[in-house]
Length: 155
Ligand code: CUA
Picture 1 (cartoon, helix red, strand yellow):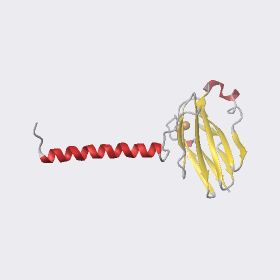
Picture 2 (cartoon, rainbow, N blue to C red; picture 1 turned 90 degrees about the vertical axis):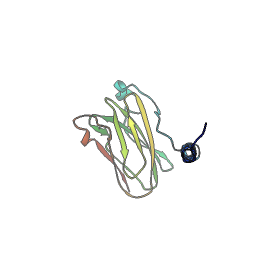
Picture 3 (cartoon, rainbow, N blue to C red; picture 1 turned 60 degrees about the horizontal axis):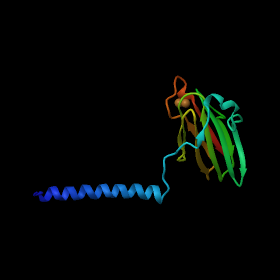
Picture 4 (cartoon, rainbow, N blue to C red; picture 1 turned 45 degrees about the horizontal axis):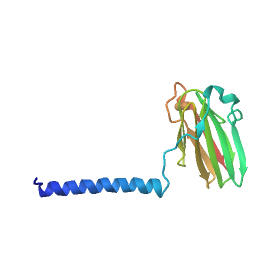
């Protein structure tokens, strides 16, 4: 079979681009540690109020500048919707929903997870600069979606 010179060049170019893309994904996943957030566990959304740690939402000091923020998402609020930590803190957000699918995106960080009923979502962020970091629900969850937000105050 005869292949035109230009066609051959484009086939080689396309194969190179494809290989480059695959290598890029492999480096991202294996070297840079890029990955999609996966559920940290399972929880019964109807029994959230009696299931630790979601029976007592709030901030826990784990020592060594590490914190865990346990946050319950429900239409249409986060509980708690404000936490305060010192500069230099690393906060692991542990979230669960009591009702519908919500989202959690924290401005100024790369924390971004879905909060799906039945799943425990977990994401970690480090705060090296003082300020207020607003988080919002980024999954349309109904009438009050736009008023579903909270903030991390870093002092
Ligand atoms: Cu919760 Cu949108």
